Length: 65
Image 1 (cartoon, helix red, strand yellow):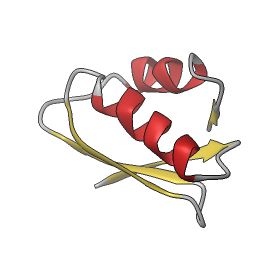
Image 2 (tube, helix red, strand yellow; image 1 turned 90 degrees about the horizontal axis):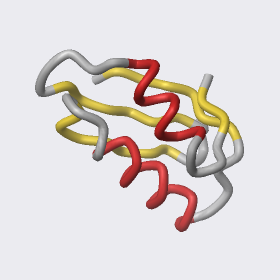
Image 3 (cartoon, rainbow, N blue to C red; image 1 turned 180 degrees about the vertical axis):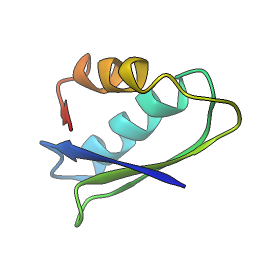
């Protein structure tokens, strides 16, 4: 499982939005947010373009690190 820090998440709606955006990126097979750690944890079915993953998260208003 890979980890990406994401700033700006505060609630269940934030969690759901980031998980949905990440899951839509090609190659992501599972996406799970940990609000307490401000992290997106994801599994790859195939190599994931991290820039595309970050862009998908930025497009919904969050700050991926």
